[in-house]
Image 1 (cartoon, helix red, strand yellow):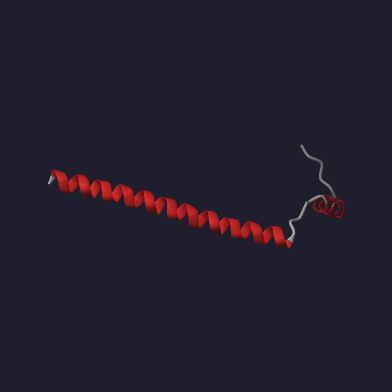
Image 2 (image 1 turned 120 degrees about the vertical axis):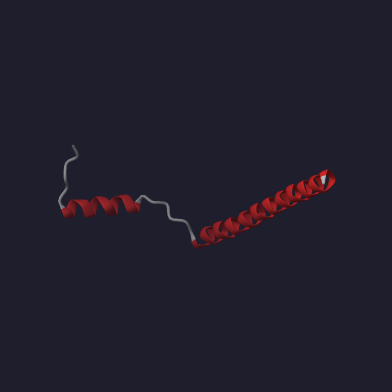
Length: 66
């Protein structure tokens, strides 16, 4: 079982841990955000093309059979 710390010790431990965090710069956040949107766009384009190919192939196959 874990030992409970009093509120003052807890806050000191929280501050110590938060000071260890490597916070990203504004530029890094902006660049990462842009990259997420670019990758989302490329992924949606990829699935659009795959869907189009499957739909065209099935339509052609069904028209050939019918």
